[in-house]
Length: 423
Image 1: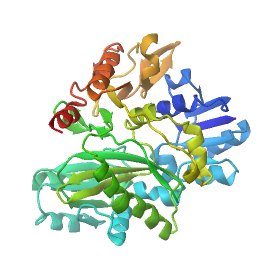
Image 2: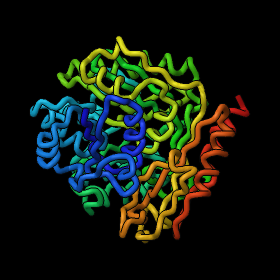
Image 3: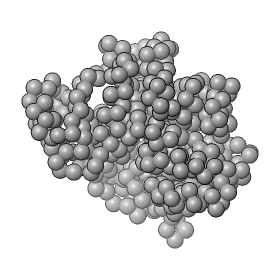
């Protein structure tokens, strides 16, 4: 069978490497892919948001199955368009992908169905938002309503920061149309947990929990990024909390989407905060997280392609989804300056000995060689019996990958290790 994967980052590389384990798959195409993915799939220069181009290519090539992973094409209806041409897909249709495409929709859904989340107000008038901030509790969180490459969230420690965030988003066009509406919500405290889940709209199977590291600098300092590294499982996510999340958050969310006439099929991502009042939803994503995928999929023992097709065909309840009882760590190597200005075009060297553990995110091929072509360049992952060994292994891989302006956090997993030692 010919399989198509839409996207071109580290997450897609992790998905493709896992799909390659299935002998039924004869060819994998990545649209657009990247210079590193080209070693594991045939890359085609069709952008992930070019829905018409993707559908035309899939039809011409006789694609038997498509995996749509990034948020933009999902929200734009890529799955709808492919399915209308008779191509089965993994991923939600547009009317379900709105759970990530609009934070206002997601917050209103949680409020309507009693799913625990932070208290909030939403605004499409900047003057009203600024008036609300005059008396809002500080710190507070300001979120752009739409997609913003994972950067549309501002944790404001002062009223001035909150005002600046609203003004930048709603008046300054910082995130374009995505920032024309904002959510201003209660600041929650507690450990954060990411839980990805397979769901066919009826059954939900959580994957291994993980802990992301969003800030650019050690000690969780600096600007928010798309993620500088992650570990799995998350030590704060105990079996008792997992059972509570299933009952109070996961299953109610699937049921709520069904009641709204928006059945969700694909990977539903739950960003959670474990507060003193119990677990609460910070955000939903309508797809695999990045870089969470780079630690969760290496721990998956079951065949990914089999699981994906069972989601598409609504028979997930009949399919075994099994994970290793081990630990994984992914360290992101970024271009110095990310998430702001950075240089690219430097030679990227990935030794053959560690190639299987490296997921390429931002790289191109120039004159037959890999060169850096993004802020987050590669993810380096290790799996081990202990978290300490997984962290050590991931840094050992990271130290063997080289490019001129390489930068990474040196404390990925430190918080998780401290939690393990305390526990």
